Image (cartoon, rainbow, N blue to C red; front, side, top):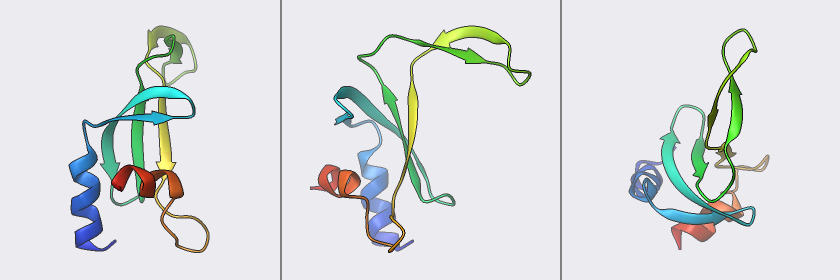
Length: 83
């Protein structure tokens, strides 16, 4: 990934955004996976399972968004957040 783009993406961490009709916050850039992680803050908490699949607690919902499509074009949602 280009260093300039990575720097711009890292500047988004902590920013409040709207994703899929919900209020979310960008929490991490996964450089090696070319993805952004967003946490939905306005939704009901979801049940999280442990490593054995047993329900253990309720947490905020997270989404991992790919940065690029199959044609290596920047995800339009992410492009919109970058301005």
